[in-house]
Image (cartoon, rainbow, N blue to C red; front, side):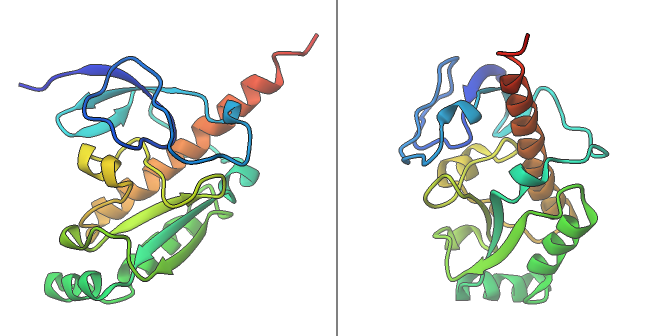
Length: 188
């Protein structure tokens, strides 16, 4: 039996033991107004957090918002060794996500590598950074454990790459809608 709980989540979730219909506070200091990071309605099903209003993949995403994000792949020995065990080439994760960025609707998203994302037992790992926050951010589409660590775990299949990309794409689209609706509030 799956439990469905409605929750309100910000872009970042620090440490939440259970989800409830409350705003989640970020432990990071934001350099910009928190108004840009409005809440999103989500439903948890099992252990994966999914968005109620799925993004449409054909929509052009705001390049200004997209450039605020960076996908980082882990190049630690644990992640590299796990890729070898899984039969995945050392640069496949980076290449697969790079191709999704360039072939997708948000070519301004940055991509890079880091020496370790701190989730070696769940290798190979991928994370997303946002310029307004220190470290990595949690995104709708992560499992509860991934959300806790703010790192996508065991990313090595096409479905995994698609999940990382669609989670980021959805967040960019949501932020674009929120920014657009905030711009119209003072209009006459």
